[in-house]
Amino acid sequence: MRVAICQLNSQDDKEVNLATAEKLVREAAADKADLVALPEYTDYQGPKEGALASAEPEDGPTTQRFSALAAELGVNILLGSIRIQTEDPARCNNRSFLFGRDGKVVAQYNKLHLYDVDLPGRITYRESDTVMPGQDIVMGEVDGHKAGLSICYDVRFPELFRLQALQGAKILFVPAAFALYTGRDHWDVLLRARAIENQCFVIAPGQFGPYPPAGACNGRSIIIDPWGNVLTRMADKVGYAIADLDFSMQTKTREELPSLGNRRADIYDLKTA
Image (cartoon, rainbow, N blue to C red):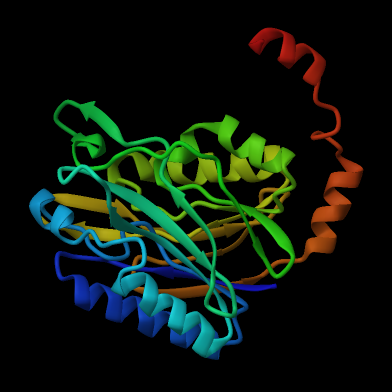
């Protein structure tokens, strides 16, 4: 399977952001990608008021646009996340959509873990001020291969990805707008750990660079194989990178190093009962 990760520097102009995302999807499809993955907050990065105003209904113009694009190009598309309206006008969902080659929604996932941090003098951010957390662990499928959905900060919670691996995931999606300050030290380490411990391919398209009023994202979008090797990584620019996933390599890895099968579920279940 040929996979493209698209890296964006979304700002506070939603239409410009979406036009850039569509352009990259078209370029990656022309490069024979089977799956094109976009980052978290593809739609908008900017002041809180504009973020809430950018939220759409579940079947709004942005999902319709990328559904039509997937069907037109005959590719799978991960729309890393956009803001979706909820019953609370003060909070939206941070939702990821996976579209199949026919444009139909294969899976949709609301971010479970919200980024609420206060590192004095470095970064303060409260995603929960404007976002309502999800409640469900979500799996999808890409060309017959099971995939676990997550978004950004979720990567710090390994139990989510282990549960997805136990449900048969071969791919783990981690679209992100990872903060620059923490990303420089933690991004690669966390993603490679999730790949190695679950023996999955990790597909992590990200945002990079500054956005208003004072944010900055890490970038370094990446695809990692089940052994923890980096298959491709983006430089600090808007664009895309491609890698080919070899599922026979994954099968061999799981057979030769059967760590998922060596789990002591009998002990874990006792501890969590």
